[in-house]
Image 1 (cartoon, helix red, strand yellow):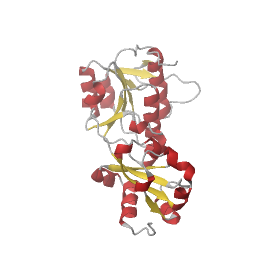
Image 2: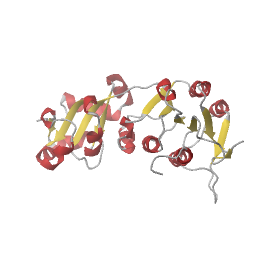
Image 3: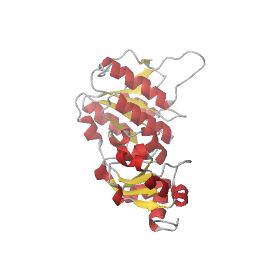
Image 4: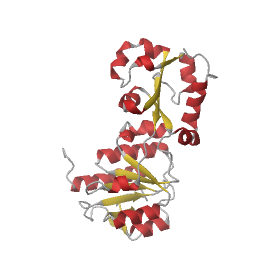
Length: 263
């Protein structure tokens, strides 16, 4: 049993939880909580940790993808000390990252793509990953300045969609837009200037939606590279929606036009 925060494994966990650089160096991230660990593909789990209390709760065991005999047991107070949540459930896993490229996403049949430029809030990012899966998107392309998809808050907010969506970072978001357009994918920038109502275009063809930073929106270069512009009309004194809400509106309009299964 691990009984000290000085334990090397516990130190590594804290690094992986708190530092993006440590995650990138290790090629791993931390998934915490019963649901997230249960949804993690078993072949991507590198290490599994459970608290004393969790180990005694036999009812939890049937939901796990990995035999608990391989789990390392951690004293409750130590588990609470390394956990990223206020009320830890007593289980977390170190998970191997999965890499994708824009080409992986573009190659899908009639792809619907979400492009994100400089999104900063990890919770927003996780919500958009979850929404993209629900709307049937082929994948998500992110600017390098966008939040880390493996931030613990992003991982939790994605509710498991992180494992099922193809997500790629682009060194140059404008170049990525040009790559999509060259592949016959229409890129629509969500912006007010020079735009048409979001319900006007035909999204049944291959298309991508470009959403910008929560505070400053899209950069002028990204908007110019897109070519097409759409807006979400609003009543009252609002200027814009939350970035995650805007992504949901646009993606589900495309899903509606494409007749999402079950709709």
